[in-house]
Image (cartoon, rainbow, N blue to C red; front, side, top):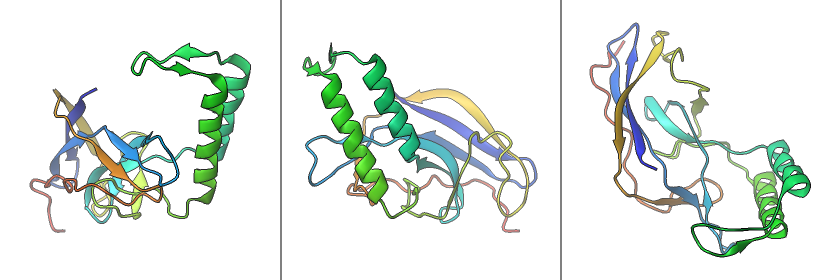
Length: 176
């Protein structure tokens, strides 16, 4: 999957910024053999002063729902990527480990560009209020999908283990 690129514009000030929804982020656990993909969401990072890609942490309820679904409907199947058998029991155990991790995590979701926890997730960028000026943000999908390969890794608390680019520069944002 490539990264989706957009231009973010504000209806009130002159904010116009490129925004790339980046994929390929993973949590690395000292006591886990597997890396876990990081679920992401769009939102505002106060430290970056821009729209950014944020962590989206699953709730304990969501994980319990995954487990219940696996118990009721799961079946052993061959993983098309690895060629290994993926069993329901193993999938449930992975969910239980993730549940223990979420229950023990101390930090709230972070910005994946700078690591700040001063973030405001947005269900959708279109219509999101631009902090500071109060204008509405528009997400203008450019239709460009980057196929640039990259992988970055984080600790279970959301601290980066990989150097990664900071937020994209905003163009024309007013200082008011």
